[in-house]
Image 1 (cartoon, rainbow, N blue to C red):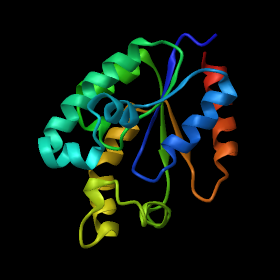
Image 2 (image 1 turned 30 degrees about the vertical axis):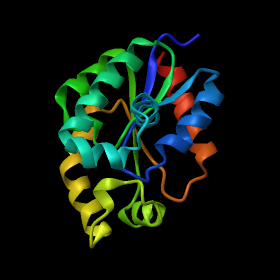
Image 3 (image 1 turned 135 degrees about the vertical axis):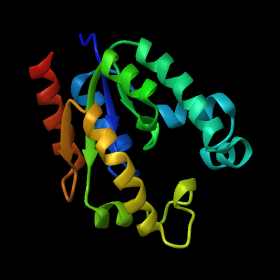
Length: 172
């Protein structure tokens, strides 16, 4: 049985939720998605929370949920793309498990998020430029928090999940 969590971090469209579900099955441990937990608790979707409470209000909710999920040892936890912006969140994840940074090319991220209207930060004139801006700010934070960095470009999610499972098992 896993005593530590596996946190998946990375930009929108890197595959955190998809790969997280598969990784949970591969490791036979529960899968949790921090954004889904926030939505379940509030009864509202993330864009609505951003509209009503602003990004800061959303980030407060995100930290509270992260603390709770981190306390449940032995889960795969997919996080929102901006969770690493707060040093407190990076410390929580590093102390409660392995942090796996899922990365992909700008082209892949744009392609994977193009039709998704539930990403408030991408509801702008030029989503590609916004992804570039977010990544330039966040990439050093993802890297500093990461135990493992995995590129998901044009790779089957199952293969990525199996690779992470192998790395986590070896590091246990």
